[in-house]
Image (cartoon, rainbow, N blue to C red; front, side, top):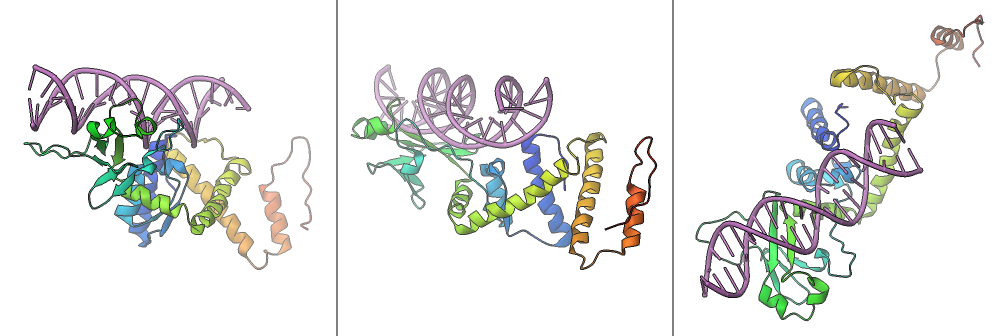
Length: 246
DNA sequence: CCCGACCTCCTGCCGAACTA
DNA sequence: TAGTTCGGCAGGAGGTCGGG
């Protein structure tokens, strides 16, 4: 468990901390990681797939689908060997149309590579109105982590992914239980260290509770009754009578 | 429950850079 | 010098999350 500020990017980053800490302390690396779409960003997926070899059972943060009836970038075919897209009319979208005298990396500040069709190809194309009605040519911005996004897209179509979604619910229920039943919806201790301490204690209690459930038999009834009275707060103005455990 | 803040991805625009 | 490509950026879409 890792406490962070209520800030999404920080929360997502803390996953790396937790995975690496477990790796370091127990020499265990997860085979797959199940989470919501907040973790489906390109850099996070790249970290899972390329750096850690973890299967991302995560929905991809993807907005390639167009709603105005024009072709989405999914309609373009990616040619890995040629490092180019091909449009539905068979024309290429390249990142390098010119041989620059000074070599360029082609990677933008946003860690993307821009692929464009030729203006001349588009001008003569019968599909232009369905492809790039508002611009002289078509542009596709491809993340440098697109390969990792493709891995997540492939996994999202498998039955294993559906199974993972169900398993995720079980984990989420523990947090829901912490918040609702154990009333850990607000922290008493201030600061990140306070939050860490409070959560560690809450998680310990929750684990002990689950361990107790796994015991074949509960402790003797008399002990349980005494424990009950020790932990019970007397109501004001009422005497507490010992109660028999059932 | 609704609203605003914040985040990522994507599109379209525009000036800079480059070539013929 | 004109035409084309390149890269950055603003802003929209759509999602999550916290606070009132």
